[in-house]
Image (cartoon, rainbow, N blue to C red; front, side):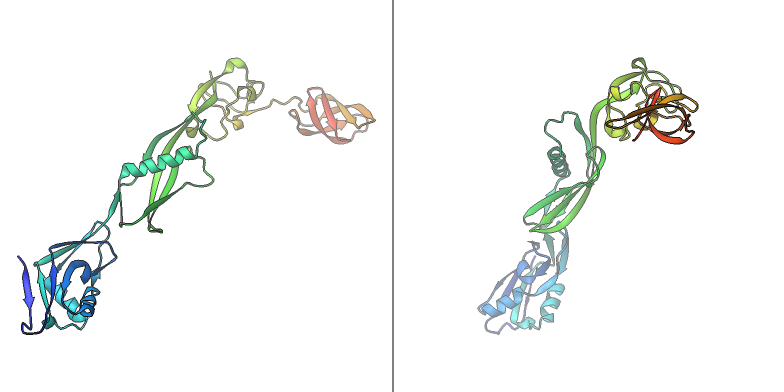
Amino acid sequence: SLFTLASGLWADPLTTIRISDRVEIDSAEILLGHMATIEGSDVRFNQRLKNIVIGKAPLPGGSHRFDLNDLQKRIKQHHIDLATVIIQAPPQIVVTRSHIEIKKHEIENIVSEFIVQQTPPDNTTMRIKEIRVPGNVILPKGRITYNVTAPRKQKLMGRCPITVDFSVNGSVHKKVWTTAMIEVLGPVVVTRKPLGRHKPITEDDIEMQTLDLSNLPANVLTDREAVIGKRTKRAVGAQTPLRADSIELPPLVKRGDLVVIIAESENLKITTLGQVKKKGRRGERIPVVNLDSKKVLQARVVDANTVKVDF
């Protein structure tokens, strides 16, 4: 039922303010003009009533309750004589804020589309296992746009934090943090059997397996040829993916070995006998004693019998 507050019944004429029990608004403030139909012959006075701020609007999707006393108080605060108006209103008025709800699955689709756009079209090894979204997002009504970002230095694989910024009418309104679990399959060199420390690696020691690279260290080895002929740095168990830091080239020379020292330029080549002072692998520079001059030279290992001095 409506309560009608009428004062000054003989005033000429009165302005009528009619309010329903439920009102939906779009703005951040609740104006009397949002809530009421205002009828009267004085256009300026009507507009003055419409511009009265009743209160701050609720969050999108939320609601506030007002009663007749609240309205009277706000009108009087704006120096308007209640005797000049007739207020027709229910005991309570519920004001709700209009909103747009972005569902959880819609956010998942936004993130999924972003990941696909960042992946080369010929990549058949990538698969999105899961996208975790906190929940639905409530936004004010307006022009909705969004921007998706991922950490610049992180590859889109494994556990990836991805942010979605929702804007309303050009202003960022809500930031949503999501997590994508991305599987990337690829070939990996795996041991067939346990390998002891400093074990030379042969074809029989390894096999290729297709594994999820996102669950493996970045330096895992994916090329069989990069492993054959090298040796383990430490003992390795069976069915273990080999990493670059778990293998090494075996030393070609060791301390005490006799080698040929070569010093060569475009027009001259000198060879002499030397003795190795430190073990070395192909391409490494090691100290070698020239047995003729007894001088220690820095020479690069060429093979098990030869080192070369820059000349």
